[in-house]
Structure formats: C-alpha cells, structure tokens
Figure 1 (cartoon, one colour):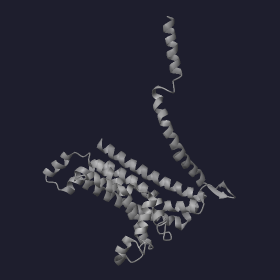
Figure 2: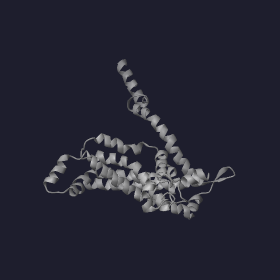
Figure 3: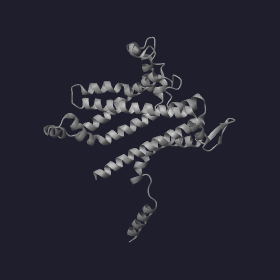
Figure 4: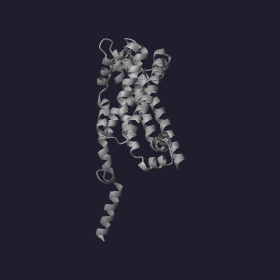
Length: 305
C-alpha cells in the first residue's frame, strides 16, 4: 500500500516539475548554442538597425527624429538613382546567373565523362572571395595591361573600365561569373531527380528536346527554379564586396547600387543613422520578395492538391 502511494507521489511530482535535462528538452539544449549565435549575429543587429534608423547623430550621441532619415533618403536623387542602378544590376544578374546556371546543369546532366572534374572547374569562382574575384576582374580591364581590355579595344575603345556603362557591365559579368556555379549545382540536383523514363517516353511519342524540357522536365524542377530565383534576387540586391573590389562604386556613382550607397553612407561618411535607414529599406525589399515567393509556392501547391 505504501509502495503504491509513493509511486503515485513520484508520478505526480514528475508531471508537476518536468526535468529540463532529459526527454523532449534534450534537442533544445543542442540547439541552444546555434540559437545564441543567431541571436547575437542576426537578431540583435537587425533590431539595433531599426532603432538606429530613427535616430540622428548629434554632439557625439544620438537623438530620436522619427522617420526623418527616411524622408531625407527618399528626397535625395543620389539614393533614388542608386535604387534604379540596383534594378538594372539585378535584372541582368538574375538573367545571366539563372540562364547560364541552367544551361551548365543541362550539359552536365547528360552524363558526359569527367563530370566531377567539370564541377570542380565550374565551382572555382564560387570559392573565391569577393576581394580576390573583384581585383582579378579589375586588373583584366585596366587600360595599360588588362588582358580582356586589349582584346576588346577594337570594339569598345581603350577605356571600358572608366566608362559608366562599361563599368556596370564589368560588375554584372564578374558577379554572374562568380555565382553561376551555385545555381548550376542547384539545378543539377533537381535534374538528377527526374526519372529517365519520363524523357524516354516523351521522346518515343515524338517530342523534341525543347518540348521535353518545357512540358516534362521544367514542371518537375519548378520549385528549385523558384528557389534559385529567390536566392539570386536577394544576392543581387545585397551585393557589396564584389562591386567595391571591382569599381569601388565608380566611376562617379555609375556602379553605386543601394547596398554600396549604404556602405558609403555608414562607413565612408560615418553617417550610421542614414546607413541604418538604407538597411531597413533593403530589409523590407527582401521581405516583400520572400513573401511573393512564398505566395507563388503556396498557390502552386494548392493547385497540385
């Protein structure tokens, strides 16, 4: 009798005070270090940027000014023009990275010899740092001894690097060259999940390669395609290091995108409040893009159901 009573007391005490170091709480303890790192490196800086964006530097400190920083930004032609350059840069960057990445993935997916070697060569630009890649592209377009500049001089003149349109083209090509490998690997992984029987049956029915890809393969890799577009879009908006290493935002403001404008405001001019306001605007743009992407994925899933 006493034993049963003691067992009942122990069971009740266990239900009242759960052990935080066993059972279902163990996975949370393993996740705690990563969560703390994210909290320190991601959540806190984001919150601090929002707070700083409504402040103004004055007499060595900060004072609250509300939305005044945003009003000043939207009223500056240099900031509006930087957003326009961001759109131009992003449009060309997305087209090149997605198009070339898909093309490379389709070629490698044909199961040719030395596929692993091709992947290593294609992935070399991705492992390079922004500074190394940008410096290399800048040297190749220098007027006196740039290798590519010498080849293109008969077509575009002796100074592509100092031409506004040429500088933007160099930045776009350098950024796309570095990012194609990532999207190629994404598309290659998706293509290798498509059963070979799908292509073979469509070919037996008389479909050509374009019809096979558009009607059979592309619907199967569409989720990966949308993910690649999302990641590429966000990367194009947030690119800073490669542009600074290649052209430093010049000549003039020719390659100063919104992210580079943020860097110049915060670190070049030591106006951290204005830089924080730019970062908040870019954060909101990224959120809108993510919401649109999730909406597309949700609508597609509901249609399939």
